[in-house]
Image 1 (cartoon, rainbow, N blue to C red):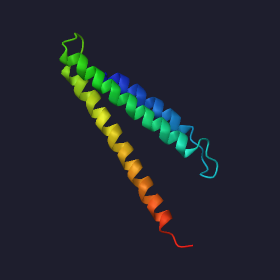
Image 2 (cartoon, helix red, strand yellow):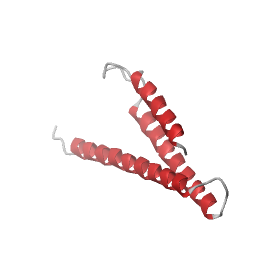
Image 3 (cartoon, rainbow, N blue to C red):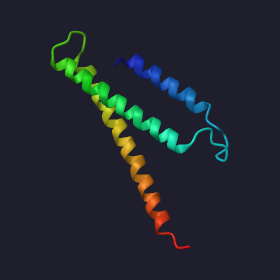
Length: 101
């Protein structure tokens, strides 16, 4: 994955964020749908990293160690972000369960 590809992804994410709803009371998508999409994206990134690593180790030409390291780092970041969201969800769920009515 080249730097230009990563910059293009970041630009795409920026454009998507600029179209986010301005009011918190008018969500355009359900949180569960967004979370499922994020999980699928994390899984896809991990699969890509694993595949790229396997291809590099088998000696396929055109794949550099830097590409493998970059993709594995992206995979680690994606997984860590997913874990953090999960942890916050569990915290909030526990707080709701402990709420006295």
